[in-house]
Amino acid sequence: MKYLEAFENGKEKLMRAGVDEYALDARLLLEYVCKTDHSALLAHPDRELTGEEEALFDALTDRRADREPLAYILGSWDFMGITFKVNRSVLIPEQDSEFLVEEALRHCSDGMKVLDLCTGSGCIALSILRYTNDTRAYCTDISEAALTVAKENADTLGISDRCEFELTDLFPRDNEKYDIIVSNPPYIATDVIESLAPEVKDHEPRLALDGSEDGLIFYRRIIDHAEEYLFSSGYLILEIGYDQAEAVKGLLTDNGKFHEIEVVKDFSGNDRVVKACFY
Image 1: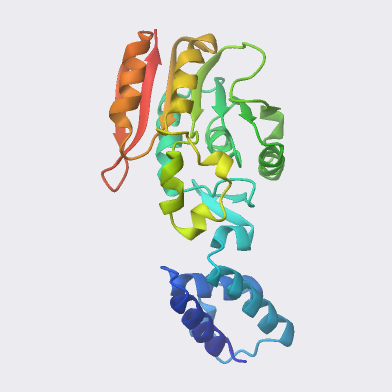
Image 2: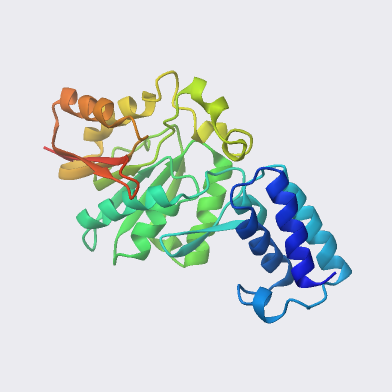
């Protein structure tokens, strides 16, 4: 089978399966299988696939047609200009979460310490470390499998000497102080999860999605205990769902220990990050 023919077949399969980005996904899978780049389709449409390449491409497009996320099939995903390993133990890093990193970088000076709660793949903390000097991060997660992925990412990026990982239910066991706490916690209300796209509800880890009945349980826990882990004038920076800004701002206000409470919107104009300074 020729390269262009394989692409057209894959594109048709994914389109029939209801995949939104069917042409892009077919091309990326073909490039992955054939170890080519984005120019190959134009430059070498008559390239013959080997039998092994053809079989692998068919198998991978079948997986995508079953709505398995492209990132899990490829085994990696780009975030903040960095490639991170991902698998079904961690959420796929999304562009929306880059706003969380960017806000943290606004307040992060060289030598600071960052606490990343619910670290998952480690993409948030490791991105902060990658774009700062002499900073250190402490990363927690309740999933041992997720922490394995985060540690591998730290090793790959060559910054494992600047971060530590702990298997724990949210906060570290030691009450060490940090300059910044960041978190993209589970924040989807339980009864909303089944209405999400198949790529999310059927494949991403439910543990990293489910924020309980109203989606706010982790924000309550984080805000209630953040003072035990923040230096004075330290920042708490949280990713939120598009409709949670007022609720999370209210939790911070009612706590009485935070000021300069601010909501940051994403490129779509949706509320995406809430940040506040600890007195």
